[in-house]
Length: 155
Image 1 (cartoon, rainbow, N blue to C red):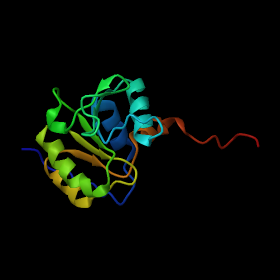
Image 2: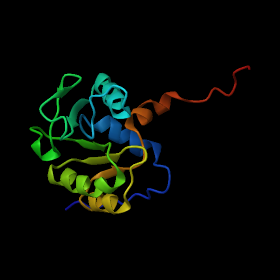
Image 3: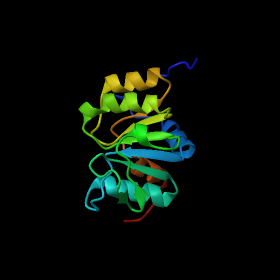
Image 4: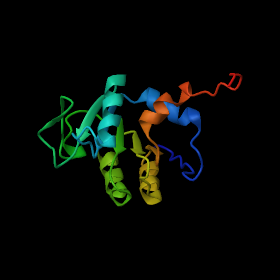
């Protein structure tokens, strides 16, 4: 039996919490992935894929097609391999249902994109043993350690 860990999603996430997630996950299902290169989700998928993550686009409107050469699935339940993390590019009201789907497929992490938040969805996922991140972008967090300020630079 897994003991649930509940994060305070009103506070900044500890840097090691985010780093541990990004180091440990290999396969990321992106719910709300889009083939339009002008969409933010496309840019995030591109960077994560180029960084080495096994990206799985999920979008019922584009199912059967490809995004960046990756097969698009209609729903999480249709994915044919284990998923470590479910990343959500959908409006906040959809997060609770996606959290349940993430639990159902055995994901370890539920990550909601910037602007996406639902505390009840977080409780549901955390109660099932998933780590949860809301209102953050994994692409930004991936590179944050390299953004150290150089306070001794001359102007």
